Image (cartoon, rainbow, N blue to C red; front, side, top):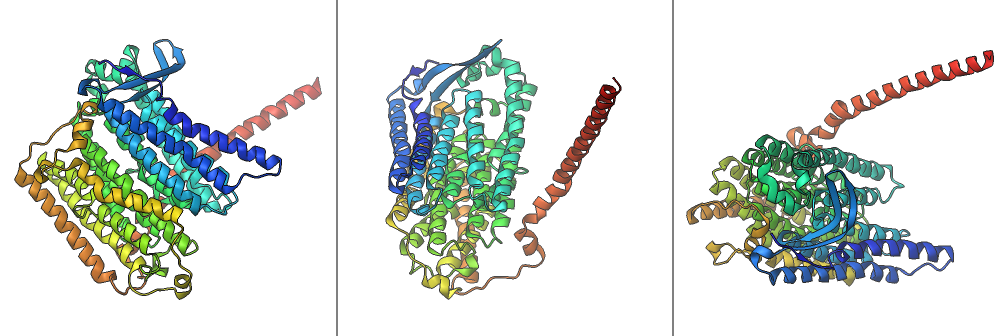
Length: 603
């Protein structure tokens, strides 16, 4: 496989990384001389790097498009990073149809989130630090996407993990925020151990022949089935941590402690989609072990179900969206687990638009209500926040899978793949979750924007955010409405352009279902949506007050007490073990110290 060498790929991650460094140094320098940079200057400087990076991402797409299908690869070797025995790792970057699609929507939504943050973070004392972290986060994600092999990917993988810690615990005066950041960091490290072990076994089996993706793919046939199984399972452990799947999903809802633009960046197009991207990137391995794919698919669809149950009972507007993110990630893993890699990645693509829109819309509501997040203190905001309402309504319709909004097409493709490939159980759970998604999404919309105000004082002070915040909402709403048409299936007269674009990068399995099977899948999804939104309207459409949960509802509201269970079974024994080791070490040091002193004195 011949690759086209190019000299600008390194600039794509380098620009936001340089932006982070420049903002930090300028702020530090200006503070020391007593002439602090204005918020306007910092905001403009912070947005320049993501915007230019987006333009480079578009260039990558068109450069690849101009190449023959079998030659759609761009590469750049920047320098030799290290060489130990057979392990020869370069800091290299690699772009193909898969990474180019990721680049475009990561940089596009990232730029809009930066612009939105100018208004959302206005007046914050730590304004420069926030934008430095935001640029650093974007740069790390771009290293993850563009790395030419698993080692360089892992650099970006760890970078977004670090940035998530810095941004989730951003308001560190509040201890709960710090604990949330610690939780995210620790849980991700648990998953990362799986990634590291997977890389180690992969190198042990094949690394001497080259440890970049192109070489690994060319030599995958040399691997034994048992080795492939082990490597894929270990890599998936890493994916469950980064993309919040069972059992490592517990960190993501707590990530809401960070500023709302951070929630949008983490949940929409960057960190949490990294695990899905990684599985798709290694599709040449996963396609060889269908049994592991089923583990991935069932883990994903069960995660979608459990998190949808949680989302039905939450009262924090950001927590509702957080659990919906976990649920949608479950759909994505169901897709890639069933070897419908393009379907899973297409849902990553559409999800970036409507989930960024919903989080930024939630941020606009929180901003308008002076940081109130409890939906049961809202109500009647439709007239007060018309732009926010209309855009969030579009995002909600896309999330709930209403045709013809973008989420309908991407989610339906995953469900159709499950049904057509004979995995009826996964399909049935997926349809059930689709109905639950419509229910809890419109429960949020009806309670927040419809009916009468529940807190008159909060309502009276509500106002539409400034244009710098509403303009990104409008742009994202357009994407949430129309992005699904980019992969329009043949049954609707489309050519599935995104699937065809991704085909050279993926070891795709195409289900052989009939048109009638596809119509059944579509019909079931639409019926599930209709039932979910109807129940939500009847319960919350006009007037509803905060419920008092009992029984199962209370159990689900407290997320099945899973955090308490983990604390009892894992955290406390680990702390006790650590304390015991610490105490024994102290005793040994004391004894040794006493022996030394007595020996010295007797001498």
